[in-house]
Length: 150
Image (tube, rainbow, N blue to C red; front, side, top):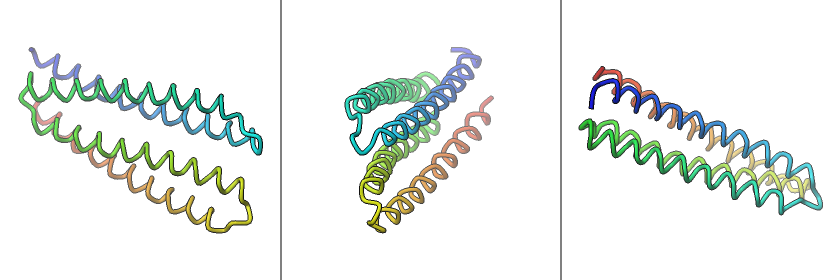
């Protein structure tokens, strides 16, 4: 393969990451809409959203793993595939934290008298911030290393 294929692969990786960001935005918006249907939540609609978002994340993850494999096999860039492994792990953690935050928000809405609920929300938000910082660091390392070979 020629270097432009490498660059195209790197650009596709960034495009997939942008799609992940958009999927999270839609997931958050959908959850906010779901909370507005309380106290008699429209769970069927929310379940459909979760299903669609899960499918989107699975597809994006599969594509990232294909890119990782190509970088490793076709371009002999185990350094970049290692960054992608780290990224995938942090993305999985981010999704788990996002679900945890959504549950905490619903519990807080259902039990406004429980001060522990707000504390839990803040705790999970802090974990998400740390996770996003780690993701940003990994992406920065990927960018630096991928530009090094150009």
